[in-house]
Image (cartoon, rainbow, N blue to C red; front, side, top):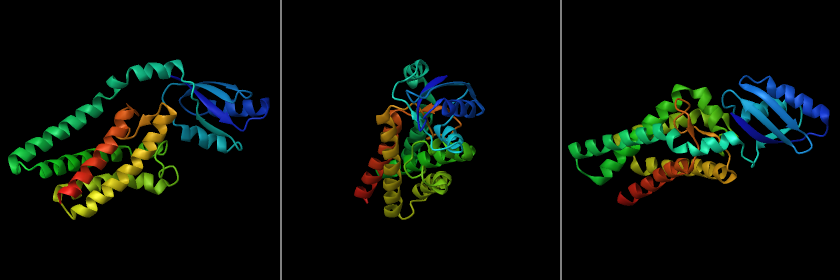
Length: 239
């Protein structure tokens, strides 16, 4: 895969050479073509490399900053065409959770509020566990777009446990007001980060399923966060 990035801070050919060699030394990067006058770098990869990884390497060189360029590469355009196919794992998992909540509701109470609670509980438990399976990789991916995780490693590492905890709280129906309030706050914060990245049209992986499944960030990711916010608000209203 090939991506085009914008690198600021370069002033000469020496900068170009240092940056080129540094980026090439990162495992997974196969080719680097830097143009310091245009502040652009075309980077070929054998696997997706997070911007945060490249930024960390460049920071050791000097005051350089790397970000995704608005001009999308040919490979990125192909990825866009395959978004629907790439989202199949997400649709399947959400579908299974929905079936679980419907069956549980029909068997137990046939109550709409109970059904929503089962869906939200299943959602947070499954998504939280998937993130925990590869926690370090999740943190790297999550820091790419979450507005708090970018500034706090602690929050990035704790986030999967927050989701898992919320799922358990929904299942046992413990202090619904607090549970739903936390959900609204946490998922709203997540939605802001996703929305900002989508506006920039950056092609990055979504960390919603951890790194177990390779899911691209799309407007479906935003809809997923907002759905949890809306459902939590409805749960508060129905209390």
